[in-house]
Structures are given as C-alpha cells and as structure tokens.
Image 1 (spheres, helix red, strand yellow):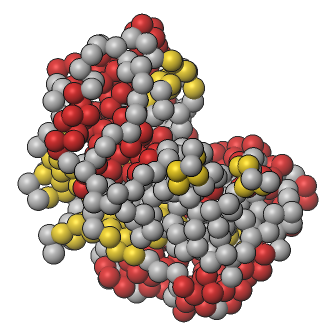
Image 2 (spheres, helix red, strand yellow):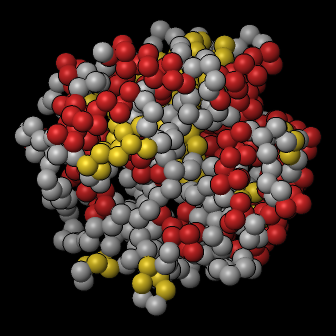
Image 3 (cartoon, helix red, strand yellow):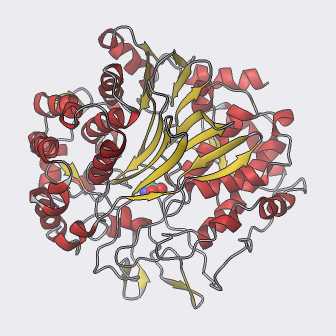
Length: 579
Ligand code: GLY
C-alpha cells in the first residue's frame, strides 16, 4: 500500500507536469548537470540548488559551479526569482534564512522580515472599529511593510559570500533586459488576479499591457527592474533604504489609489536585518532546526513533531488513518499555541523555551492517546517567564511565497523562504518590482474578550510568519535542507515531509511529491485528485471534518548523505540542479 501511495502520486504528476516540462526544456542548457524528473531525486557529489523556477536554479548553479557559496547562489537565484516568479517573492518583500556554516560548525538564522511603519497602530486594518475585508486591506499601500530582502541579500554576501557582488547579477540583468518567457504558472496567476493588477498604472502596464493579460510563452522585459539591478549591483542595498529606490518605494505606497500607506523614508532608513539563534527541536535521533519568532515556523514544526515522539509512526506507515489522526491532531495543538503565543519577540515575550520543552510536549502528546479526533483543541500553558495573558489570533495568510534550498561545495547549507505574502503582494509596483502586503499577516483585531492579541500591529513590529526554512541535523551535521511556500500550510507541509523522510523512509523527491493530508484548525484537508482522498472515509469515521481541495505546496529539499539528493515539488515549476 505504501508503495502504491507513492507510485500513484508520482504517476499523477509524471510526464505532463510543469516540472517535467521545465526539466526537459532546460536539459540542453545545463550541460553536465543532472536535472530533476518527477520520479527520482537528482543526485550530485559537490553542490546542489533547488528553486521554484529553472532560470533561478540555473543562475544559482552557474555561481556554485564557479566556486561560489550557497549565499552567493541564493543571491543570484533570488534576483532571478523576483523577475520570473514575481507573484511570489522579490526585492519588495522579506525572507528568513537558515545557514549552516561548515567551517564554524554552527547554525544561525537571518531575519529579513518586513517591519510596520512608525505610523502603524494596532487598528491599522480596522474600519469603524471592525476588521477590514481582507483584500480591501491587501491591495494598496496600507499593507506594505519595509522590504527586508535587499538588505538580507547584502548581509548574506557580506558574511558568507565568495564571488564578487556584481557577478551575482548577470542572469537577472540579462533576463530583465533581453526578456524571458512567461511561464504557465505566472500566466495563470496573472489571469486569476487581473482585476486587482488593473488598479495601479505601473502594475497594469507591466502585467496587462494594452489591456491584455500576459499569456504563457509571451516574452517579457523589465527595463525598470534592470535599472534597479544596475544600481543594486553598483551600490549594494543602500539605495533601497536611504536613496533613490527608497524614494520610489515611499512615493508608490503613499500615492496608492484608494488605499495609501504611511511608509516613509524614516521607516526605510531604520530597517535592520536581525541575526537570531536557530530554534531546534529533537525528533527521533535528529534535531529539526529553523526560524524562530517572528516566524512561528520552527516552533510549530518542532511542537508537532515533539508531540508525536512517543508514537511509532514508522510502524503505522503513511497510508494509515491512525497515523494521520495523530499527526493532524498534533498539528492542531501546535496551531492553538501558535495563535496565542507567537509574535515578534522584540515586542512580545514569546515563551519559545516553554513551548518546546520536552515535558510540555510529552503532556501535549498524551492528549492524542484516544483513538478519535480531539473534540476540542485549546492552547496549553507552557512555562512562561512573564505574567501575560493573550487572546487567540488566526490571521489569514495566503499561499504565495517561494523556497530556496542550497548546499555548496564547501559543505555550507542554506534554507531560505522568501515572500511578498499574497500573490503579487500589495499589487503596488515601484522601481520594477512588486511591494509586499506582509502587514496583513498581523492580526486585524487588536483585542479579543478584553485581552490583547500578541500579533497586533505596532510601529516597527514584524508580523508573525509561518515560513519554516529548515535544516535537519544529526550528530552535529546537516542531513536535510527543506522548506515550502503555502501560507500557514507551510507548517504541516514541512512537518509531514520530515516525517515521510525520517519515519517512512521516502526519498527527497517522494517527500515533495506525496499527496498532502494536513490539518491546522480542525478541518482535515486532503489533496484532491490524489490517493490521499482514500483517507477521507476513515478520518470522517474518527470524527474529523474533511475537505478535498487543491494543496499547492512548493517543497524543495536536499538530502545530505554519501552524496547529495535533490527534490523539487512537481506542483510548481521547480528544478533541482547539482554537480
Ligand atoms: N506571508 C506568509 C508568511 O510569512 O508566512
């Protein structure tokens, strides 16, 4: 049955998948590099990169092949992604980066999350005292936070780069100037969002030229992005925060028709990328390490796994409804804690240690010992060093975003999830790139039942994220580099993939491909049109609400063992390249 589940999944996406077509399309250009098909991991000896677009993977592969580090390759890839996958990430957004430094033998993380402007208040997304409609808040300048990605790229290069900064811009400048082919996924995303892309002149002219939505296969040039890249290559991130590009950003935000924002030159000048300690949680004989607050990613992944530590998921197997009950309810318990406790740690005392305490997680795990779906899920009471009480909060987070996994020839590993939040972010464009709507990751309500909400907006605060760039360690060495887009579904996508790798013995391509079954807030989401649908009856019998739906992950993984193995999620256009 286990083999059947995987092979059904592989068959469903084989051949006609965008990933396979992309792999076929780029094979001649990448020469000796191995290219991912849908069925088997890409293998390599020296280095590997997996991103959401073949052109971005190729740019990073060129850099790695020339002796660049994972940080260098990430920069080249991100600059291309901002152009060819503009709906997901770019220079107008933010990112979290997890870095394994082979020489230092240490993990660290960089927080390049967007910040709220100085004039933001807890009622930023309220109208007449009530939460605004989500898209009314998203589209326009109000939702735009200070972009962190340009400074994050500069910081990563200053710390860990080896090639010259300007050398990392070659592919992005070439594609922006000479044009690139609009992918089927980008075209579908433009068509789906045409009504809001139409609202701002620069955005309309770029994505809907002459009133017609760009189609798959169209050649698209972006001279404004090429100009921005030239300035970025020559001067580094400074123009984005204190210069010419900063002025373009604030002008676009403040003049956004119908829904302007307050983002100012002062806000941009105050921005900082923050180094934070990696947050790790034990699972089986591994340490699962990732991004702590303001992301809820590592805590929620670690909590879900921690609550499952006493259960033999390997014996149950992936097709077992009992395994899915345990995983789904462990996830619900983690999401309950996330909703109450996790926010920007520079503003809110997050009980990260208590939430990941083994005794606390064992107690949470014991709640699963019943055989039926939990009828009620409440946040727990982790050990806490502040006498604070928060109300629960579940803001809407949309499944845009992109993930980059890289291992370089020096043994460094990089896991970075990067975003402009919603598809096409705020829809406001400046200097050739889209500006994020990350501030809508704050709670729209500021209090509930008289209690404050930890993730309410405040000046200079970073909204809570679900991004979970992860590096799984064993015996002090990295074993698996993984992450995904998908809004708050990122957390179960990544958690399930780690379980599939460690407990169910699947390879890295299979863990990106396997059909999804995930539960965050009570409803069990099963991936429509896959063998996961077979779980619907048994899960309903256990008391779960079940919904069949599309689940558009973008898992990109690299396994590190005797060699390297890479897997790219066939639901997107991603590509693993290694040598
Ligand atoms: N905006 C998606 C996230 O940060 O989780």
